[in-house]
Length: 304
Image (cartoon, rainbow, N blue to C red; front, side, top):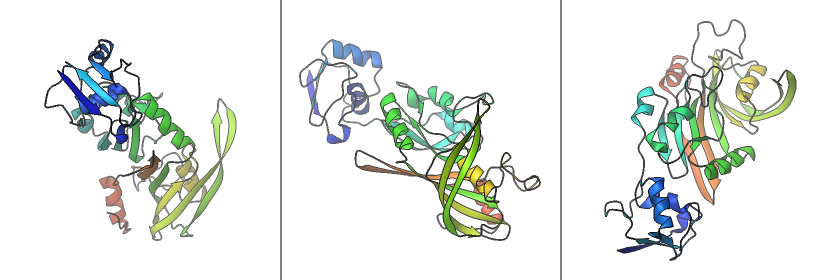
């Protein structure tokens, strides 16, 4: 029995093994590689390796390959694992062939560290979503910061996304509730931030565009769009401006945060980028405690 499929331009430059799992079913990697070696799967009637990348209008030829009618032409969309939902690490925003996007909960670290017993990368590595691959971290988000976070599904996607972040081609928008009334309604924060690496002092320039969405004499809701990507950049900058983020236990004024709130009021609200002329926009609504705090302080945000 022979079946043939043409590669759509949407899947140009995708590995043949990933194309198979995407279109034919969630087959084990070993079965796919064995079928490629035995000639049960060919590309343009030629034997190829599992790492070979297909091109637009290539023809995938299947010869007695072990598939069922139910899986033909069906794009597999893996479901979030019950573990992730149960442990409240975050809700799935998107799950495609190359990466997973989640609305990360506050209190969960992205990667393992000296003080992180539980982290997203480790949890996802045991998830159904990464059955045939492994998760790759491509950017940072502080443990206590909630919001949009991306995890790559394979090395090629990780390298591409990491380079987009490094080249500042990923546009990020954060929401922060900070102490006090931010005097200027919009502008650019430009600071030389200090950090230490192996006891060596390092000075890095940090730039962020900001806009005050609402404010009163007690606190302000600020939209922040970082241009650079320094560690703790937004937290350090607002602290330097005299308006530390509410709930920040590291960058704070001594008597500001004793009773007001234990949650860090910093949320990764939106991420935008372009890959192969396709625009990606991911938005994550803030957690309930963030919205409740806004209501308590009589601050409003028109998007929710």
